[in-house]
Amino acid sequence: MSEKIAEDIHSHLCKFIVPFTKTALGSVGASLNVIDEGNTYKATITLGYPSGRSGKELIEQLTAFCASIDLDKAVNFVVDWSVTSHSVQHGLKPLDGISNVIAVASGKGGVGKSTVTVNLALALAQEGARIGILDADIYGPSQPRMLGLLGSRPETADGKTLEPIEAHGVKAMSIGFLVYERQPMAWRGPMVTSALNQMIGDTHWGELDYLVVDMPPGTGDIQLTLSQRVPVSGALIVTTPQDVSLADARKGLEMFQKVNVPILGVIENMSSHICSNCGHEERIFGYAGGEKLAAEYDVPFLGAIPLDFSIRKNTDEGTPTVVAEPNTPIATSYRQIALLASGQLAASGKDYSRLFPTITVEEDK
Ligand SMILES: Nc1ncnc2c1ncn2[C@@H]1O[C@H](COP(=O)(O)OP(=O)(O)O)[C@@H](O)[C@H]1O
Ligand SMILES: [Mg+2]
Image (cartoon, rainbow, N blue to C red; front, side, top):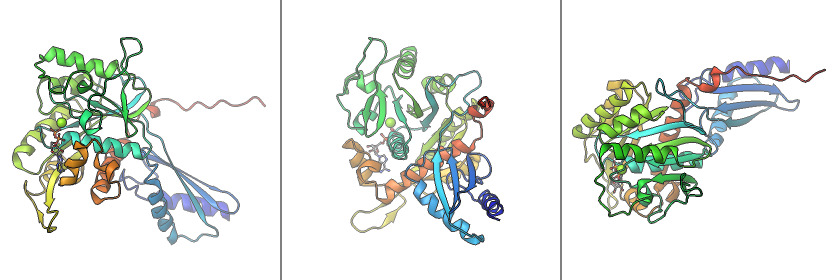
């Protein structure tokens, strides 16, 4: 009897739509196991994206979902997760120890790409993921300031590899750690490419679930090199709602599509402004441009972040919003977007670990 019910629970749960992958629990991007443990049933769910924090909410949703089936005893849910390495551009190999590189790109500068990058990276770290941030904006590095690391210098044990600098639980590398902030950087293309290669390859990242790359704005040679030579599992496109920014975002998006890097989604930044005095909401930069862009290319729209004084203030002070004010609606929006992005990647189904057979070693009887 109980075994039959365990099977019923399993087949019922297989239909549950996982909030951040948008796929059924029984399909790609997650796995499920239900066993009868005597006094209770135990349902173990393994997600392909980090859920150390969001898992609790998921358990509530799963419990509610099971209310419609006849049970003779309670179901205990265990939510586990494991990030695997997803496929990269043809001809490239994933970086050693780094499961996935996620590039955050925009067409234009000043749309808030670095701010989005740092908040998403920190949100994933809060879920338990091992995160690195690579500030690839050679001409205008902003991660040192946003992470509160201005003036920090990376150590090197052997004169060749660099130790990343840690802040708020993430590891970071930026050209800003290697040159002084006000020093003008008149670098030619090849120098930039080699500096980037060094920061990626010669940084002692250790094991990472995600290396989030804050790309330079635009779609010039440097960006092209990055999109073609760095093994990227997925790209995020940041835009503001207005047309000029969208036109540039299109170019950024197409640059990744050309090299078959999946677009994990579009994020609209500075979406609306809520007056801190009167609460009036104003669409300063237009309306729903990010959503339209996502629809045009048939890629996910991951969410919108308002234009808000606190976002600028928090990043300028070196403590981005998800860390400084974790319980605000803005931090919640960043977390949702981060989970949707990593969920998209998990659901992309292109998973290296699945290419290898599962090897079980049986003990001699
Ligand atoms: N949603 C937002 N609300 C308010 N200020 C923002 C927001 N997003 C970014 N900013 C501010 O706008 C400026 C540009 O953002 P930044 O992330 O550096 O853009 P980019 O990397 O695209 O050049 C920064 O001063 C940043 O603090
Ligand atoms: Mg920037």
